[in-house]
Length: 366
Image (cartoon, rainbow, N blue to C red):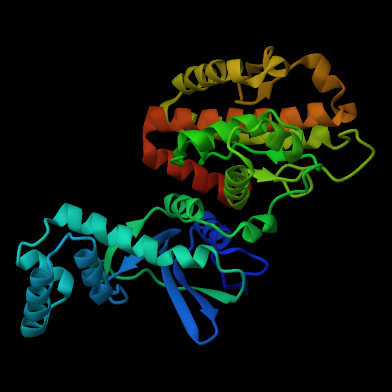
């Protein structure tokens, strides 16, 4: 996605949704969120959030270490004195005094930084502005945080139920549940995986709530998380949704062709890297996915160009499919694509997986 100026209000775009959009477009620049006279600022580098040296609240961090009993108060005073006398940061003083080893120190800094962001996740309003810019120099950044992980952490601590109504479809409205390529990277907790699996077998949120063992409050929190990450949407807002019509998916042939072009793109990418073996690798990924796709996809096969043929009889009547079958096809192709991208990662490594996803975004395949 193109990195460009992005302005708006948290009324229309909740903060976790905003983080996801900036991560999705691989943003590099600065985000400012205002509330009255107060302003919060975040820096991004290719969609990741920068732990910046200059803006890190190290004095508050030192107080937090004392409060958590990581450091005794006397050690904190020694640190303050060393930093002032030597003209160095408190972080460096902690290291020079040998108070906390580097690995736990960096883990503590990242954890503190994330917790400082939590109030933004529940903010119901306020303007924001994102400006593209050059990356912060390596010497000025303490680390890079994976944005999806941070989004999940922030959403899990939300307590204001009113916020959750902002993105969720109506309870009786049909829903779209996607399988984006990044899905298998998300560090979901077991109960979140349970909810996602149950959601895939639910025609709408009302049916999901009736069957969920999580209870209404936790169920809605998980659903809001999935909506922020473009995994859950109403059909008219879903990535592959058809226009409203008479109940038949009249645009299905074009949609299926577009989905198949994504599979062909993956095939071309991996074939360029390893040649004919690519067909076997992708074929194996389809076989592994077949068991999870239901009866519609049991006759599918991988064609020579990387497209996936389903049932010939089904394809012949693609313009007259019932709504439920149409949605099944959309979700099935999403899962096939996710399985193929994962196969690329296993065969070629994470760098090629990331390069593939970026290439698909540039040519409009994602």
